[in-house]
Image 1 (cartoon, helix red, strand yellow):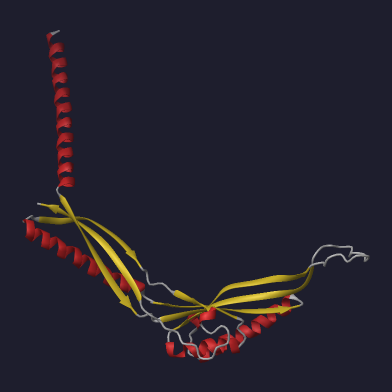
Image 2: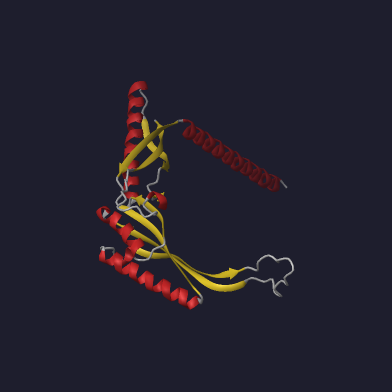
Length: 254
């Protein structure tokens, strides 16, 4: 009986010790987490980089119409071949020319209004009278000195619509990397200034966040702005593309 009581007492005490140890460990971790969260300081930095565009993007369409779908497609194919041959002569590589859409639409004739004292047509359904084929392209131009001549030449070779002309930077990630480096340097400069001003000791960086704006993708001008109405020798100001990166560095305070 006494042995049984000792055994029960032993296990009871052991259980209490384990519970106390777990409670103590959780309490210590919470205090450490609180200390880590509280003893931090954050600094923001901004970096801006500007660059002139190095590629022009031209979007254009060839539209053909015929009584049959095949005839409309054949005509479109012939004109498209002339256009691609023209672009090759201008030094445009195959990788820089692509079809962005290809559509075939029927053209309808709709019954007219019923005239007084005349019998209307038996069928009021619209009739297919032909087909329209539209092929749209996008071409990259790297030599801006040829840009005006290429736009004029496209129309001469059978292009119906020059829809958009835009300018962009081909490798925007390089600009983003440069802007990020400037932003980090800006944040670290602020950290060192504050450290010297108030005498704190900064530890390691424990968090980093980033945001950016002005991603240097293509910006476009409308066709009417680029000589779509037949004006000879249009000029195309390219301007500059700018990207801004904002970062935040969070330091531990020793």
